[in-house]
Every structure is written in structure tokens, then in C-alpha cells.
Image (cartoon, rainbow, N blue to C red; front, side):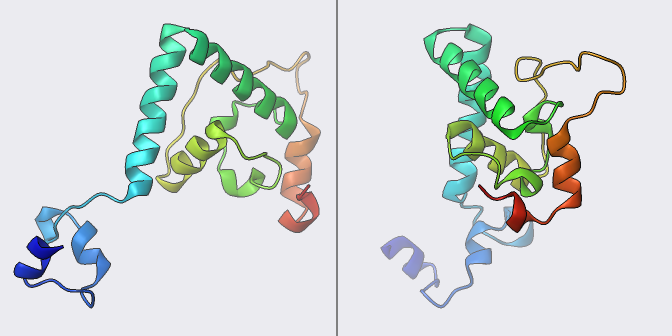
Length: 138
């Protein structure tokens, strides 16, 4: 608004100046994506630690997402680019997308099933490596 225009910025100012850190001369204004993503992570961790009703819902949603994708490692440790077409849209998927966008992972034991035998593999992991994303879309 008016404060920014009085500072000499206008609609032609590069957005990177607004979102860059103070260290490089920017205004350090956070993107909504970063605010939402960090809030998702805080809520996820908080509710899972409390094990309240919302935490139970997140646990069930995460387990369902894990089973739908068909991988054997915790889902939040994978880069979402390889599995995006397999994952239905949900709150945990949005959190997972944010984690992938900042090159971070979240390891929890709750969204994870241990293979029954040694050297077991998940068929969907092999399929994701071997096929293009177009073939894997649902």
C-alpha cells in the first residue's frame, strides 16, 4: 500500500526485492506458501505429539496416503515429484509438497510399515523409477 510506495517501491519493483533477506537489501516479506507450510509442520508435529483427536485423524490420513502410494519407506522422506501423481490431494500431501520444496523431510515411525521379509521391495517404488509420470497418473 501507501507505506511501500512512500519507500520508493511500486508495481514495477521486482518481487525478489520484497522477499529477499535483509542481508542482501530485501524487505524479507514471507511468501504465503512459506507461512502456510511452516504452520502445517507445526500443527502436524504438535497434534501427533499430543495424540489428540486431530492427531489421530492425521495418523489415519497419513497411513491411508502411505498405503495408497504403495512405498515401503516413510512417505514424507520421498521427494514428492516422483510420487505426486499417486498421492490424492489432502492436508498431509500439501505439507509433503512444502517439505519437498525446501528440500526437507520428516521422518516418523507412524506412517511406516516394515517389510515382512529381508530384501522385500515395494512394487510401486520399482514402477516409479521405471515409468514416466504420465503412465503413473491415476
